[in-house]
Amino acid sequence: MNILFARELLARVAKSDIEVNNADPGFCFSNLRRHVTGLRAKAMDEVADSTYTSEEGGRNLTYALLFGKGQEINGKFISCMQFIDTSEFSNSETGKKVGKALWVSSNDQRFIPSLTRFLLFSISE
Image 1 (spheres, rainbow, N blue to C red):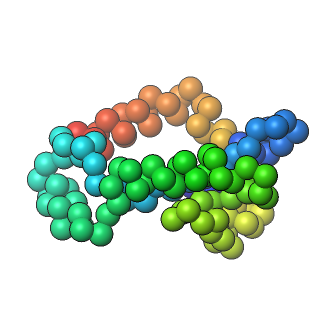
Image 2 (spheres, rainbow, N blue to C red):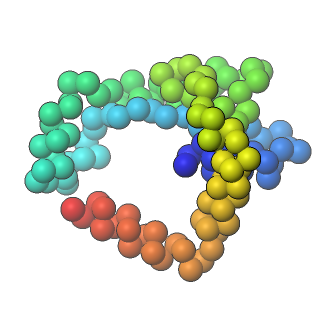
């Protein structure tokens, strides 16, 4: 969904000097999870050895911000400090339509309270 949303944003600012990219820091094991308990906490502990540190995840975001300048990266997906090809769906006409729908729904004031409730519920579990 992120790449679809980012591409729709890019389409809306295409005539400006703004670059839009989608950088994935990866699954980072950080103190942000300090309030997670129960099964979720156990599951996160099980995969802790295969996660990135916050610093490692931050490098990917820094790469997208600094080292991509001047390259043809506008609208690209960046992971592990590389530009990654996205799925056929995200490049299809249907993917573009879904991106537009995501944009519209994210700007719909009726949608925001339900999204907020969903996020708060997800965090509280």
